[in-house]
Length: 119
Image 1 (cartoon, rainbow, N blue to C red):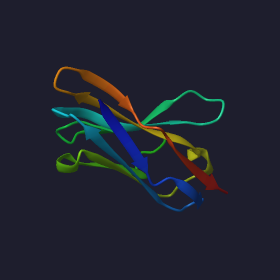
Image 2: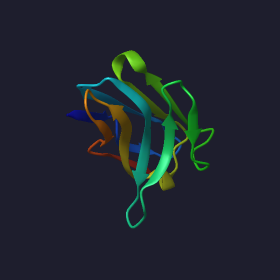
Image 3: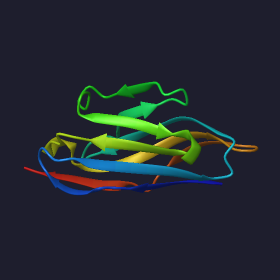
């Protein structure tokens, strides 16, 4: 079994910053891609950013230049630095990881963390 634990959400004014963290735990052989998705009320879940095991990143157009995704492979953790936040960034943010266990492959999700940006 594997688990993703998220932290760092909260309430911030427009133009402010937040940093989200997501740590994977359990019986892990390797972690391939890790990333963040978000879901705003009444909308579908969408990709925010993803990073491969080799460090290659991909961002949604709406966050390019404002968000930075990084990864600490030794800690099985990813960090999403969010700057210049806008009210439209308000959503529940979910961590996602493609994890190889001893005998299983996991498409793991975190429990979600709320990010609210006030105007």
